[in-house]
Image (cartoon, rainbow, N blue to C red; front, side):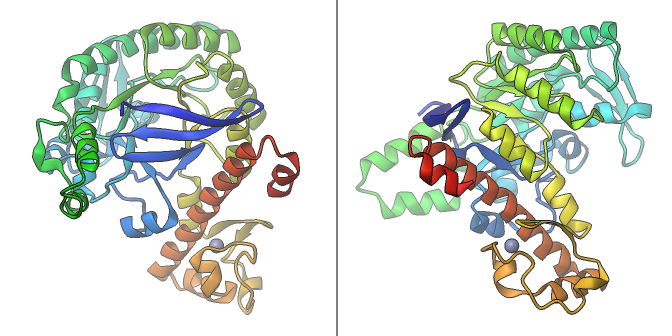
Length: 403
Ligand SMILES: [Zn+2]
């Protein structure tokens, strides 16, 4: 089965369905937890599976520096390296490199930068970013783009958008020539996971399963294009059209959440969505709060990622059905109630606010683990509710009660 978005229900501009990837199906709209260094900070892969995570994001820039792409490639790619059989998306490194304001130099060829770790010099170009992402072997990889800074004047925003379009074409060319080099392609039989081997053993006489396996591993990664254009809806439209002309199996909206007001983010997202193909996945990068991800999913976004739930958790900020809770506050010191009485995660089922507050105040590692589990569960549950709302589109009463 080739990579695709299978749309199963729509409600207004929103759509619910499945993203079919070489490493399993992903229910959409989906929130993707961020595992910067091939690890979602504070939680293990089995916890992510238990939470129902079907796809996670990893950062090429960070893995490029440490442990290095070649190490991951030799270990069979990210899936095998981190023992994660489900889908993965990597970003191109562009966003991180561009946030190294004082450490980078951009020209037509690419970006020279210095590592934030040790100051060592490196270079990323569209071709290098593709080579790195093919070596890492995520299911979905991203074109190398220039993230336009905010604010940017009209000339700067246009020049940046045009550079991103030229780089997108170079990314596609390199990818088409090298996509068979992914570590888990059919040329690499060792990439079959332990779990898959078990499935094969237990179903030796089941030809259908065997065929599916063979098919899955003859697949390649999918390269998404990225729409830029700063905060100008017209430039965004032009960027979308020219990126679609190059031709990708999915499109992302990049360059947002870079310091602009929230309402402006929303306006740009909504106007850009109108210019993206209706039958292909739409990925909004690096956004947002639980309310925002629900709104964007209801507006027709299929995929989102954000460090907010995991980063906030590590700082003691927890998202609940009653609003944001700062668990470090003294008022929770003797609070016996669950963090969120409406939450069915295993943290809220088992522990009191008083205990979570104590763990945080005492700097216990468990505080980071439990806070992250709850926040991720809250984000994933938010998306489950939106999916149910979309699927109930033709039964307004049920839909109303779910939202
Ligand atoms: Zn909870």
